[in-house]
Amino acid sequence: MMQDMKQQIMDKNEYIKWIQSQDWYQTIELKNGIVTKGKFPTNLRLKHFSDIPFKGKRVLDVGCNSGQYCLVAKAMGAKEVIGVDIDEKRLEQARTLALNEGLEIEYLNKTIFEISDLGVFDIVLCVAVLTEVQDFFGAVESLKRVIGGYAFIELALAKPLLYVSKSKLWLKGNSKIPRGKSLTEVRQTKRGTWVINPSLELLSAVFGEGYTVSYRGAGLRHDMIEVFKRPEKSASKPENKVNPQDE
Image (cartoon, rainbow, N blue to C red; front, side):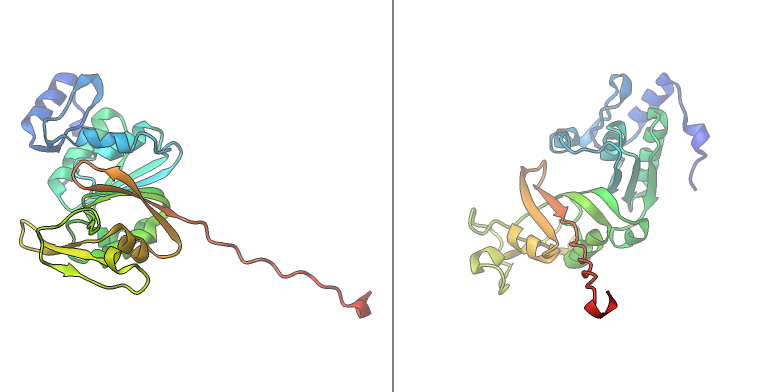
């Protein structure tokens, strides 16, 4: 059962004690020099988000964990921030941090396949989620429904022209993509599920013609990708031609 939010407001000593009592995945830099002891140095990933114009924007973080990037977006002036995750423990951590940091952020327990009812967002963050889902193509379609401007996605890419993979499992073929660049690596996760690592060209093809997909560089764990939804061309209004007989 969700705790009463008012009961989670703490003084500095209580806040530090609570943070120290928690198990953290993300390394989150908070106010007053407080830092969560995360299992992974996720604060290093912030360099990829420093140039994102969050101010005044509607932001969605898919797979938000304890809310690190939601906190950053809101602190940088985002108008509205929503974080979704399937781990209720992490969501409770995120809610407690937001409350004690004085930032209004909404956190929801949802999968990537359940986000379409949240509407369209100016900026969508999706870090290390597509790399773990079995239905990669369904997940991309779900993301497309909520991207109104930009998406920043970290996932593992197959780079068939840059390295030789140890994997013997590859999918081939897409008539619209050069043969060498259409390769997709198939791998098994630690949980035993099977997932795919697409090439950048295949990822771009899956998003489709209405999106520009570009490589931003090496991410913290995988590759950082930027997706831009191009504005739809408005249908031109027909000219009002005058019938000479009406003049």
